[in-house]
Image (cartoon, rainbow, N blue to C red; front, side, top):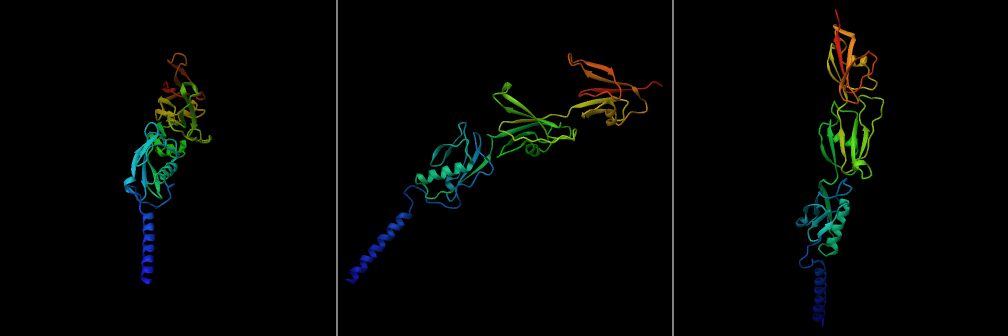
Length: 288
């Protein structure tokens, strides 16, 4: 009896171990479970992805499932084992969770841990042109302001104007584009407060050269000079280093384009006369 009882116990234990082992084995043709970090990890500061963005998909512990994918024009990607997925407009963390849920629900993994890294952004781009050190196209990761973008572009050049222009798509505006002027420097108007604005995908920023006037003739340093608020002839002469010994204060003229015809018109001016952008000041020599 003791032998028979011992044999029965042994059979029961063996059967129990067999059931326990069977519960831990992966389903035939499917992958073993992986567990490293929560599936919500990934994505950094990218708020959402769109067509043209490239993602790197990592399933921890399952190297064969890692893949680099690019969203097509519909905002879709192809995920190993899951196939086509529409992810345009979603956050990377949300995409990682959907993939993890899909792998678990379809029985491929018991506890999948998924991370999504955005390796290239093409759907949310702002372009900066004009008088900046490094003009080009820059990704908008999360939120990006105009001043932050100008900093990424190496800052303004010496000849840059204080006002930048943001061109933004707007179906309600004339021509489908809205023009926003932003005061981004105060080299010429130090009393004004520098402004900033949050950028949107597709914005084009243009930083023009500062408006200038020109001065030639009997001055110490002839050439082009940036405009200043309230600039008059006396201040213009000071910027050019003053008059030479042969100069005549009574023989100073300005050539200015006619607002109607565009033709240059020359007129004599006094020291307190205003100077306008594009003016050409000429200081003639005096009679001896």
